[in-house]
Length: 289
Image 1: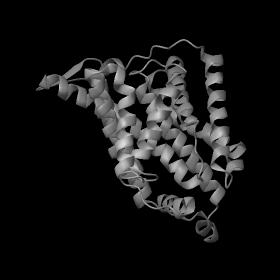
Image 2: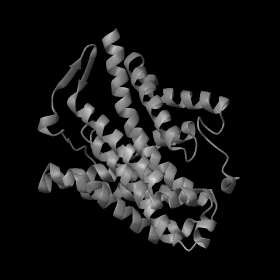
Image 3: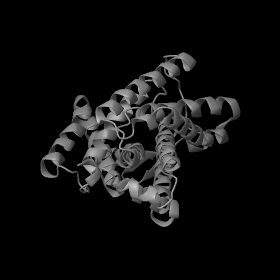
């Protein structure tokens, strides 16, 4: 029993960190752009498919190019479509990005088909690691390490670089940032591209764990919104804590009551929203109130 609990909790942490990557990108985009990006899950799926295609063309090393490629696609989408939504009603951005998600999914089905694509982990990451009561695959350990490294790099970028400070300031008062002479449209384009790249990174890491299929988008977007709601809008620590909590709760629920796994994260969100309507680490954001 102890072995099962420990192993499922570890698997839940891996799942949680994947949710964290998706949710952080979604939170950054919403915090600075004020746009509810319902297409975020589609960029997650697109990252997995681009990685799948690059692997079959040039091998595992090329898979590292998938997040930057999807990030560039996201920047093009921001310039041509998302930029027109700034300052408009939130419902409009929800409708437009929902339509964008359907378009991306339709394009995925057109180019790669509707069938799932098997995508096995690299040969050197096959096998199981046994540490006392813990049993976990080598690939899941690698995913855990990669997500932690990515999140630490993102935190250092936001906290210690001038561009990161611009992003954090712009999420609170974009007008003041523009008055300081900073090219705000370029900042917004870069932020949207960064959010898409983070979603694609999560898609690349999740591809060998999940079947690469068009439904990946739907399986990712709702947990991401739940994580953002639980952690608090725009909160980096909140997204990390909430993502790990959701991953562990879902993983343990799968072990004991598989049918209730999806409902468990909504139950957790319901409890947190009752106690903390702004989320665990949420603050008051004047620009949205």
